[in-house]
Length: 200
Image 1 (cartoon, rainbow, N blue to C red):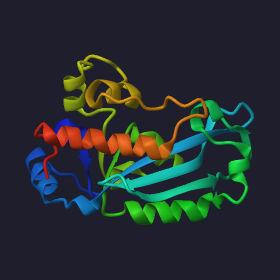
Image 2: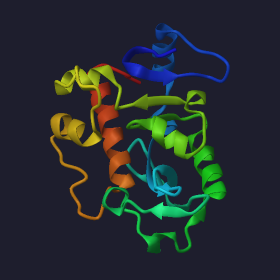
Image 3: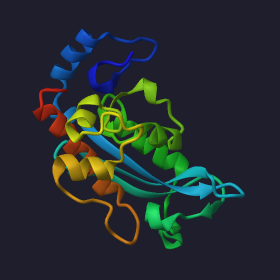
Image 4: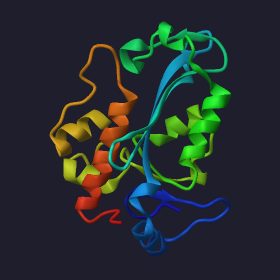
């Protein structure tokens, strides 16, 4: 079940109501909150399938907990460097997907995971998002309301940061930085808390 603000807090094989959700959120320590962002490259004959090529995780204060280039399973057919920031040279010595996946999930377990449009990140990790507690800035109703984008079908991380944090991100010509995006998602989570939502 989705609680207020689309904070998804689901334990395996169970769900909780909004009041229980609110109580549990207040019990979360800052040390149990991380932000996740992944960059994907194109796989398959047309480069339309996503393969995990970089993953960054930061803690509540923006410190980098994990940041690795990852070699996806299969053949990369499109690096999408202008968006992903991933170059062929980055695959030299990159962590194999199976190893990286276990490292990442070990960090995420028992954490409140913050991010933007997290379903894509969890799909790239080949993991069920509903087994985790997540706060998705893409869907949060308070962030949409405060930014004046409540009726928009999709809200980008870049636009939310411009409107709510008064900062510009993803401005480089070499593609996105997953560390920058993870930190920005965490800042938006803190913004929501400052407005009385998701308070801990």
